[in-house]
Length: 293
Image 1 (cartoon, rainbow, N blue to C red):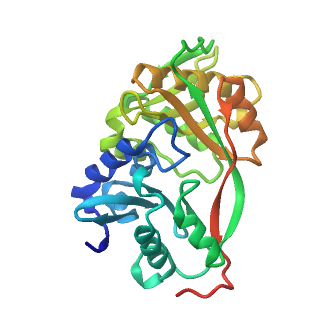
Image 2: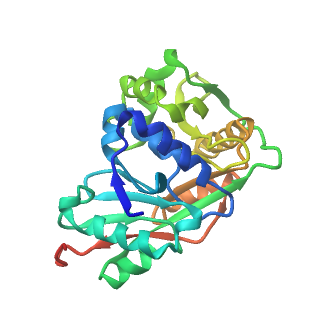
C-alpha cells in the first residue's frame, strides 16, 4: 500500500498523541513527545490540528510531524520504521516540495531522531546540520530529593500566576492564563502537571510543565523557566527536582529535557538536579540557496 500524507484534524489528534506515547522508550533517541503537542495546544485544538502531519501505510501511522513554527518540522518515526526506505523517501519528497503543504520555500529546519534514514537522505540532498542541542535525562527509579522550596501544582485559580512567571522567564513569550486554560483542555494534559516554585515572601519564582507519556515511559519537561528577577538563586535546580518528583508520581521511568547547547547555564542547572547529559543532537536545515523540488 502507498504511504499517505495526512492532516488528522481535531478528531484525529488523540490518535496522533496515542502513537507518540507508544513510541517513547528509555532506549530511544530524543524525539517528538506527546508533551510537545500538549504544549502547542496552548494555541487551541484547531491550531494544533492544523500543525500536525501524519504519514500512514495501510491505516497505520508510521510518522508524526509537528510544524512548530513556520519553518520548523519536528518529526518522529515509529521505532520499527526508522530505516524504512519507502517511508524515508516519501518523507523527503513531501518536506522538500512546498506544494505538499508541509514546509515552505526558503530556509527551513527538520528535527528527526538520530539514526533515522530520512536524515541520511536529506544530507545527500544537500541539507546541513544546524546548531547543537543538549538532551538530558534523569532516571526515576530512585527517590528524588526534596527541592527545598515551596512547590504548588497549578490549577485554574493559579493559571494567571503561572502565566506571569512564564512570560518573565522567556523573552518574547506571549503565554497568558487564557492559553493555560486552552492547554489544559488538550488530551495530553490529562497526564501533565504545571508546577510553581515560591520564594520565602510567597512570590512565584519558577515554573515548569511536565508531561507523562504513560507509566514506564519517559516524561518530558516543557517548558521550564525561572523569573528573570530571581535567577542564580537555585530556583532552577529546585523546580527541576520538583518536576522529576512529579513525573515519578505519574509513573514515568525517566525525565527528559532538551536545551540549546549554547545555553550553558541551563545545562548546568539540569545537571545539578541529577539530569545526565546525553550526546548532542542537531536539526537539519535547507540552505535557502538550494532550490526546492
